Image (cartoon, rainbow, N blue to C red; front, side, top):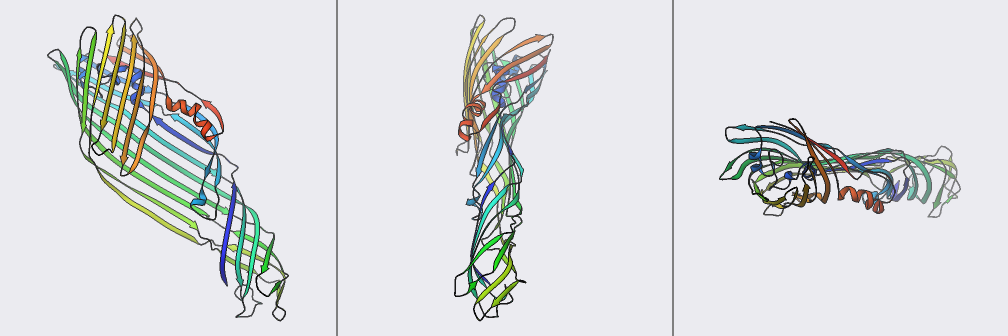
Length: 491
């Protein structure tokens, strides 16, 4: 028995939807609409922005505790994605998977902090959420597959007992059929940064000064698992044509039994910690205030690993012939009767690729400046900042404008641009460049300040107005603005 050529082509039709959710969060931008002091260093006051400008701590009461919460907003699109499996395995064509796609700003606690006074110093401790990007994907479907198999094959005694030992009969086999598969897929990815800040500040020569320390864990996690399995089975008439001087009058049925057609899995894990020294200055006059702050993070090592495993069938499965009802006439070179051809046990090619990630992150340096003008009840401010590393592996930019009107319930509004980029061992990990916009207010109830704001951003806007036109499909849910809440207790 010898097998010269085999080609299997699948056209797969998925009947059950998959689920995919893209998550993101720009907590620093969200906090800007709680109070501009979180982004404009000339307006930082107390816990309002001390992770940016520690000098703002000195303009506070004796004790403060504050928590800020940003709720989620989501756009949902019913669409379809094409998965090019033909680039991985030659036996499977591109697969189109209907998908419920969600693009969502993750809600949660954006900031929590405590401030207290020791003699002439104000001390602050707080946790501020950083940028967050996430992806979840899952699918358990039962697609049907249309397939065609063409064999250039040679019948021998090992295949059909009636063929004498030493004889060989070259044939060409063709058949088409349908079958059921089960597609199981599950994947997730996470990129997240948080900041734990400690700082102290006091007033010196009519200027507020502050100094602090930040610890920022940077986490990158990813995993993926996908399996096509089940049974491609068919029973029907099959065309078997001799390519030599034999005649085949027999009728053949065929059956395909193929389990675990494709198995893919991979995971990656990277983590490191940035340790930063940061400082700030703030000066207030009657009609204007200015703020300047900066930070420097020390070099650190990036540690992690990744692995990708593929298990893919080759072009050469095994073949078995049920020849109990075949008659072989060697004198006239004729095969008659009927039999079944069974294609089974697709030979698999397992490959493992893996590596350890060990790299030196050189550290970063940066500065942010802001100015705020206030005249009677009106105020307006501008700010901009940049942080980068010397080797280009990190970049963070932020700039914005705030305006306000002071009355018994103050109002403020603004717009902020934000971008942050990491290159982790050659892997670009980036928050999307985003412009956020919104307005807010705050009011007092005894010792409590309550902050409310309504904000949106261009990422969610793109999810609602641009992405549906790119991926196609039908938009089902579109939430473009979210309500943020902050609560501060002080005395």
